Amino acid sequence: MLVLAETAIGFVVFKLSNDAKIDNKDLWKEFETPEGANKALKVQAIQRFTSTATAVEDLTAIQEGRLTDSLSKFLVDVTGGSGDAAEGEKKKKKKKLEEMLVVSEPKLASTINKALSIPVLSDSTTQDLYRGIRQQLSALLGGVDQRDINTMSLGLGHSLSRFKLKFSTDKVDTMVIQAIALLDDLDKEINIYSMRVKEWYGWHFPEMGKIIVDNLAYARVVKAMGFRTNAATTSFELVLPEELEAAVKAAAELSMGTEISDTDMAHIHSLCDQVISITEYRTQLSEYLRSRMQAIAPNLTALVGELVGARLISHAGSLMNLAKHPASTVQILGAEKALFRALKTKHDTPKYGLIYHASLIGQAPQKLKGKMARMVATKAALSIRVDALSDAESRSDPAAAEIGISNRVKLESRLRALEHRAGIQSVRKVTTGVNGRSQPKFEMTGAAAAGSYNPAADSVQMLPTQPIVVAKAQEERAEKESKKDKKKRKSEVGDVSIDADGDESMRVGETKEERKARKEAKKAAKAAKKAAEEGVSTPAKEEKKSKKRRAEDVDGAAADGTPVADGEKKKKKKKRDSEAA
Image 1 (spheres, rainbow, N blue to C red):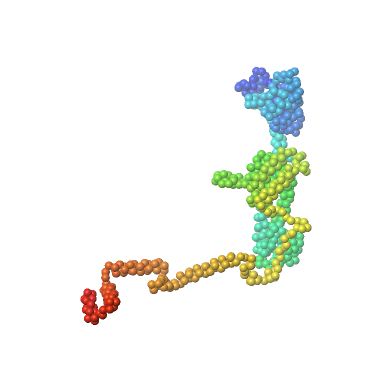
Image 2 (cartoon, rainbow, N blue to C red):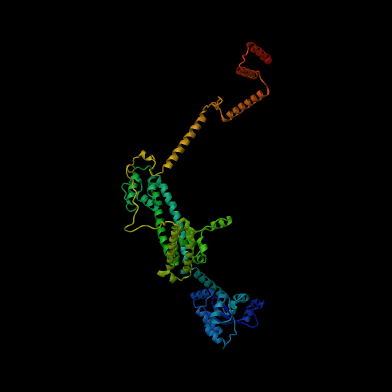
């Protein structure tokens, strides 16, 4: 049995003696002493590294599971195997290999078995064997000092580490991640510095902040003008258009700002220099990011743009990691917090994340943004995989972005079809050409342009195109409101109204509670009076009844034609008086 070992000197093949079985549990005892190690293993062959570069190349290939030409030739010479798999099958009948090769790396063992048709062994049973070889390597090689082996191992380890950390064309996405992070930081710094310039210089010339909105133009104007008194003699033709230049000069003559010193203006100029320099560097960085994205992900850049593509790569960690994500993950990448909050609260999950800033989704109507985000994420996942798995030569080809461009055209046509189906007028169509109409420039005319105020313009009249029904409804509503106001004022003043019984319904200064209590007392008095009249017959009541009876008697006698004597009348009157007494 042969054993392949990688050392700082080169590749070494040892011959394992029959006495030391590899599956023996006490194999480590054989390597406790140099004599025992030499008894268990014998050096069969050595292939030394010619240079450090060759050593780094061979060891890197072994870690990746690749078989180099030099190692392949060395193994064929040592084991007597075949250099080709087809030739190995032919020679297998003639010569059967009795020697088995022990390899430490499983990937390399599989490659050797497939390429050279050599039986290999690479599993956990070989760990004690390789541990003993590393422990007694100087004794096994014979005549080599252990300090020299340690020095060579240290130098080779440093070279291998530098080679792994060296910038590679396959990992330029690291530059993209750093560039997009720096671009975001520069945007924050520019905003902070620009706001500070406007607040600081605004004490001297506050009107200019509303005239000039752009941060870079504002800083350049402050740098060129200095004090506002220099506005009339300063030319802004390289910074501002003619309209804004005239507005700035007119506002400088009537400005309400305070006066500042030369020292204050010097510090403001220094801050303006910072704003200008950072803005110019941001423009250069944006161009660099665009070129890098075109180099590593042309299809993704053509589909969603360089900024959105760079943010997706930065969020995933690398282009290869982003290619491993499905389209559903690409769609909500960047909205993880909202996703888990929606899952926890059992609400609707987000429809888009970083991909929302793509132009295809931004130009879609609000009703179709979710559907458009899903389609863009699907095409973006395909474009990402094409960019990640293609080699550098194919990505540098001018036609490398063909898939991304074709996908973008399909998505735009799909968006137009969805808008037509939903009956939504597209806002992306811009009329151009000879027959194209452009919106005229707005200009103030009349008294407003002269600067005078016309109070008659504040009156609002009813347009003749408005229906009459609406006008009538408005008049009725106004009349009802006026009646309510009158009624309210009367109740506040204490207006007096008379009931049908002749009593006052509302006295002056009387509250509602007092009026209610008075009415209840009045009703109780009436009820008591009525009850008293029904229970006891009063003299006045009896007199009324007697008068009524006399009147009835007189009427009855007159009807019969019999005259009534005066004496009888007197007798009856006395009788009634006595009864009453």
